[in-house]
Image (cartoon, rainbow over all chains, first blue to last red; front, side, top):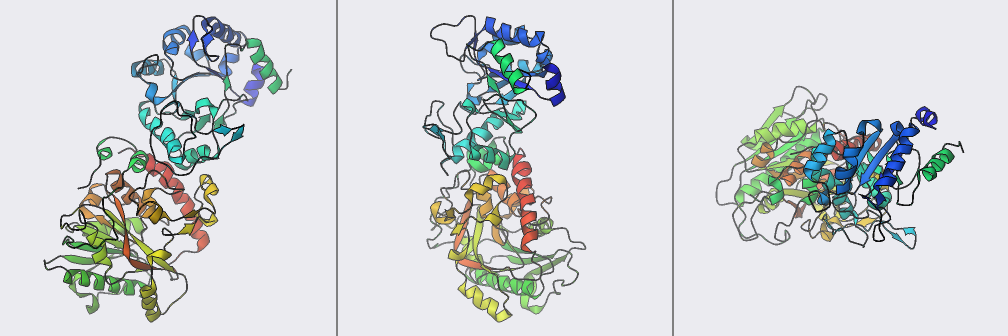
Length: 235
Length: 329
């Protein structure tokens, strides 16, 4: 498996969110226990896949800085990335500027994840909607459910890059993995980010729409392994 | 000075451009009772345009003359023609038609329109307002007056406020004799400018993101209340794209302070847009001048072919949006 990935110059991107000591009934499905994270990272290390794996920790959750970063060897992975909604910085439960700076010193890369954590494209009854035209170039509330208009999408792309300029982000991780033609076209027009991180599994061979696989509380290493073997035609 | 709060904080040009509040506070169609008496320099970058360029300069000299007569106070004006290294059809030596106010600058080599405009801008240092007019754009006799009145704080004030004035054009695509040109100028109307009403054309595509705008109708002036409610992007355009190089005016001192035009935009496309963008980023509003329509004579010996313009436009489009706007100020 590792040899095939090397031959293809391919990388696997796995995404975590919050890491807690134990999962409870009230935990989000995206919250993963420390034990499960250890198990998955152990599998990656044992199979030597770690050198071809990029770890993402989305949403700038404090658990990354307090639990994960002290426990991992960043350089043993292809890359470790924290995706940061700009307004989350210094807010309760999230990483501070100091946390981010320390992570960068440890070799972690910072990706933008919007100003707020809002969808840049929306679905209705399973159909991807076009972005409403025009609108104001303005911030929106993090819990906004209405589709963002063109200028609101631009605002998320551009102003998050401004807010995180210290870290010169080259990647924008799409909140909820949502995008449409306008999202991609707007980023391309301004040349804002080299990569837009999505939320679907595939091999990352350098494409600008970067595939990323979400790891949930029920995701096991064997499931991830089967998926990779299948994609590589080795199963 | 009309400076919004965003002008004082550090950020990229694209952020400042898109955040800009362009509400300049009055209706530019109103009559102005007490327009300020400002010194005005008109700059014409000239390259191989021939007789048309001379006609353009003559029209401008008349418009400056009319502007002077409208003001009781003595106002200084000048007309600067920057011949950008013409070989086949250099701008003729100054004749009596232009009076003493014409300054003819001959550049030894062709340095491009941005650099030529910068020569004219520096030549205008002591003037309040600099109006740039391309050598294939004919202006109305009241064009200068109509531009300068928009530098008022409001319709009754003689106090000056710094603005960018975008003029609207009619484009002439057929050859015309000298007399025919002046008749066409009389028929020119702002309603014939694409910014007044247009359908986005395939040949206007600057990047892949533009494709989904093809076929959409826009009335950019009226739908943005004469640019007052412009925010972010409108379709594929930013506010600075609304100022076309054919005829526009800037406050001279501010234009010099931000460093004039970016001379790396030397060929076709966005040659005027860099200065305008830097001024907008400083909080200077853009006002469309909607009372006097200029005439852009597209059919002239110095004009590029459509295919040349398309390829150069796309290259400049990429340079402007991806590189220039990413600069931090």
